[in-house]
Image 1 (spheres, one colour):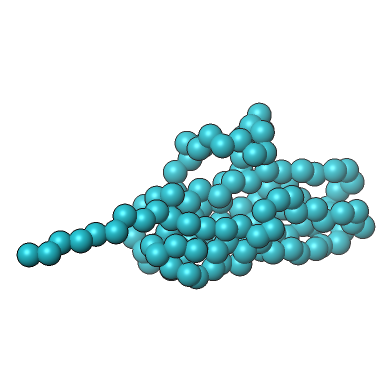
Image 2 (image 1 turned 180 degrees about the vertical axis):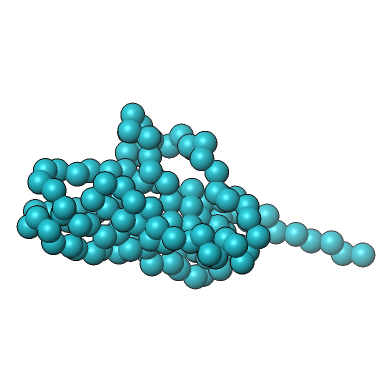
Length: 128
């Protein structure tokens, strides 16, 4: 009896990596930019996007403690909504990506008030 296996891990890319800069905007206007999360591996994976804690550096490698949901697939699809962060809205903020697939993440900025707004988000990739 011949037995074989191949051990692999999740491989992914995020383009553009960072930062997303909307530049100067006129109060009351809206701009949209996209980020593409691509699965470059042989396994499907789930992702969740969260707001980074205010005291955490933008590129900190520590994994944050807020886990992805482990709900039934149909319920999870219904919850793939958006994440509001000050002037920014990120959507979808969770999902699943098949091998060699990709997900377009939309980041929308609505300049509702004067001033500068800066937020940090992180992508939690399961089984990475």
